[in-house]
Image 1 (cartoon, rainbow over the protein chains, first blue to last red):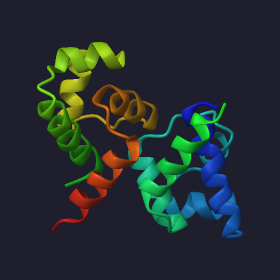
Image 2: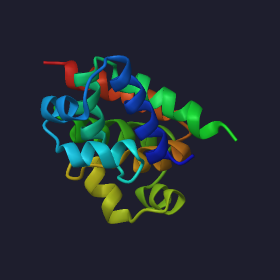
Image 3: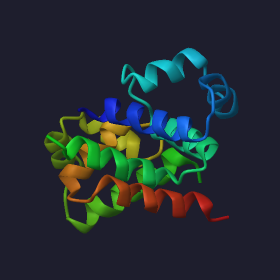
Image 4: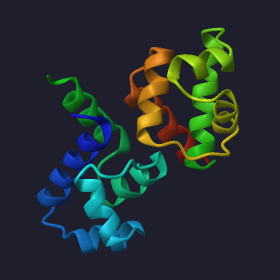
Amino acid sequence: MNVEQAFGTVIKKYRLELSMSQEKLAFESGLDRTYISLLERGKRRPTINTLFFISQVLGIPPHHIIIDIEKLIQKK
Amino acid sequence: MNVEQAFGTVIKKYRLELSMSQEKLAFESGLDRTYISLLERGKRRPTINTLFFISQVLGIPPHHIIIDIEKLIQKK
C-alpha cells in the first residue's frame, strides 16, 4: 500500500467512525466532495495543508493520521 | 506561522543538525534542489508523499515532523 492509499484508508475509517458523510467532511474542510472521494480511494496525493484541514474536521491530531499511515505502509 | 512555513522550518532544522546540504537532501529524496529551497522557505505546500521521502532521508519518522509542525503553528 502506498502513502496516498494509506491516507485514503485512514481518513475514511475515521470519517465512518463519526458517521460523517463525504459531503459533510468536504464542506467542513473547505474541499470539494469529489476531491474527498478521490482522496479516500488513494487517487490523489494530498498536501500536508489538506492533512491539517481534514484532521481538524475529524477531530484527530494530524500526527495520529500519519502514525496510522506509517503502520499501513510498513505492512507487507 | 502557517503549515508550509512550519514544515520548512522543521526540515531545515533537522537537515542542519545532520550538517547535510540542500543538494544532498534533494538528491537523496529524489527532489530538485530548488524545490527543497522553496520548501524550507515555506513557499511550497508539500504533499504527504514528499513528507515521507524527506523524513526517510533525514532519519526522522514522518509523524515526528508533523508533531513539530503542530507545536509551531499553535504558538501565537
